[in-house]
Length: 355
Image (cartoon, rainbow, N blue to C red; front, side, top):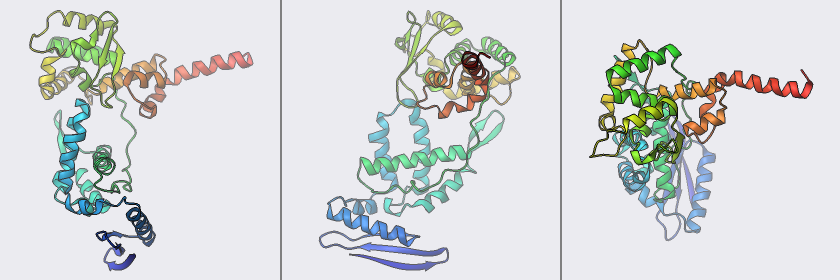
């Protein structure tokens, strides 16, 4: 039997639902709309009758911090190394903000209030300036929490609803496309070569393959096939193995780079891997010496994609090289493929209409 009680607060009316059925502990929830309250009551009664209602006690006993700990130990341990650091940073924020609350008390308004703190949060430094969190990054933090609750619902059976599901994403700017001009590329490579040879090889490899920094830093010599001229990345952002051609200058430099290897590791870039923050700082110094502004290591990936687009590559080909599952992420390069698209249409029209 379900009862709905209306309560008037300063922020407006809310509806508290209580479901009591013989042989089961009572269940309750609060909603801002009467229709949501009635729907929840009906779904809860049906779940109890069908034997699917078992989360109520756990949701009131287990805290978000405990769910996050279990998520990190049982689920994240199977994820790629590249994604672990970012995920840990994001869920650690939620642990600090909401970790003391039990799962049943965490709702959308509480999450939105915590998200508001993210937009003014200083999350690090770039070359000479503070880096504040953007709406895009804040959306990623909420996405991380959403995934924690999804695992808690599907696999751990601690909740039946995800409080993040109804949270609207913040408006995001169009994807950044910052790529090197020919002069900037030449200047950057020249400074890298003078400053640090390993950094020079790393930058050329990034420009030639479009690989992420983490993928290159976790690349091992057994994954570099000099005969087939390929590099295979096992530690990717989406967790799927990806093989890319090793051609041109990158092939020559890696062949030379591989002649003298460290005996204590089979990593291709062991020095950069051990101290990635120092490598990032070194890259910023090299960019400054080359007179290149507003450029990050990840923009080498954008540069590779932009070069492919400007040389006639299709969005599907760019996505395949970069390892994107859909074309959505590479639509930012559409304007760079216009010349190739025009040529395709001109050839089609000439064949069809004799023009």
